[in-house]
Length: 284
Image 1 (spheres, rainbow, N blue to C red):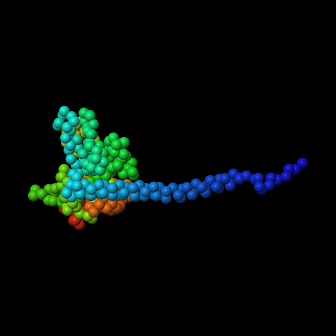
Image 2: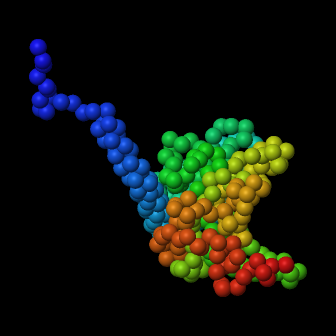
Image 3: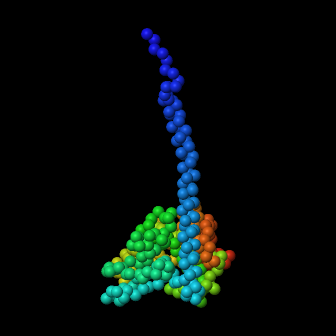
C-alpha cells in the first residue's frame, strides 16, 4: 500500500537549509564582532578619561589645601618602622594622592627590601584596586606606571640649556610645582607604557642591593623630557606614553580636563616643551 506524503506542516529543515542558516549567522557574527570590539575599547577609553578626571579633581583638592602646590612626582620616605634607617622607599604622586584622598597612611611592609611605588605598580592589589592602572592595560603587575606624570609640565619647569652646552631636562621630580607654573594647554598626566623597562623593580643593575636599588632609577612615577616616545632596548619597552586607546593616548592637561589625542606623543618626542622648536634638532 502506498504511503501518503508527509504534510508540509510536519516537514523538518533539510541539511542545505540548516547549513544556509548557520552560514548567515556566522556572517552576521563576523560583521558584528569588530564593531563590538571597538565599542568595548571605546568604553575602556572613556573609563580611562574619567579616571584621569578623578585624578584632576584630587589634584585640585590637594592644591586648595597646600597653597596651589602639586605633590612631587617622586619622593623618598623614611622607613621609621625599621631599624635600618638607611633603607628608603620611593613613592610618587600616586601614593601621595591615594593617601590624601583616602586618608590612609602608607604602611611599609616588614620586608628586607620594601617595594618601590606600591600603588602605581599595583603591589597589594586588593588595597589599591588597580586605581592607577588603565583598564586597557594588558599587564597589571610589576611593570606598571600606567599613568605617569609628564615631568616638564607637571613640575612647571622649562627645558634649559646649561652653560656647558648640555640640556637640563625639566625640573627635579622631588619638588612640587606651583599652580601658576602649569600651562592649561599642556599635558601633566597620561597613559604610560606598561612594558617599560624602567619601573619594573629589577635591582640587577645595582647589584641586587636593596638600598642602592631604592636610591637609583626604577622611576615608574614620571616620564622625563625626551622620553615620551622612547623605543627602549627592545623597541617596545621604553619609558613612554602608550597609544593603547585606538592608536592614541589619554592625557590630563594643566586645566585639569582629560582628552584623547593621537599625535601628541610623537610631537612631545621631538618638541619636549611644545614651544614649536624642534628640540631633537637643537640638542647637542
